[in-house]
Image (cartoon, rainbow, N blue to C red):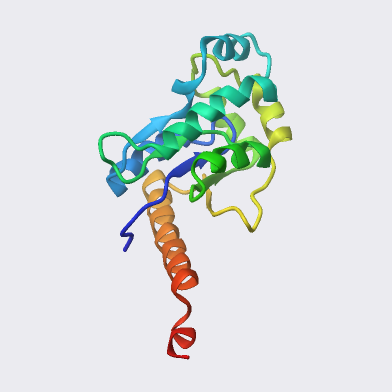
Length: 187
């Protein structure tokens, strides 16, 4: 059972299901969900709508807004979930500078699966032509980044249950690390 949730970022490339899974996970865990797309300034949205990928300078203020939101849950909530691509380690480091205990939930899928999903949806400003640039920018999570990995081919309800189980496991690991293993506590 999860007693205290850290801030959560549902991450991955466009079309992997961040918003859908983030909203479902928020309902499952009783935590407010926010879509990172809502934090983009109009200039970023216009740039993407024209088919031009964002660069690091475009993303920095957007990521800072998301980081601040992760660090200051609204309405007395103990945590929150935000969907954010968080493609590069440097982006995740920026988010962690605001919320050091953030856990990244990486929705993993192959290019073909994601491309099929993108072709079946209309997005306000994120054309499917930008998928290649996102896949090229994606840097895998490293061992020192708190995270869970899930396969987007799972049905959404199964995916959310998998995430909830993995989060509970992470919490158990953190508790053991902070308090010591049972054998360490007996010494």
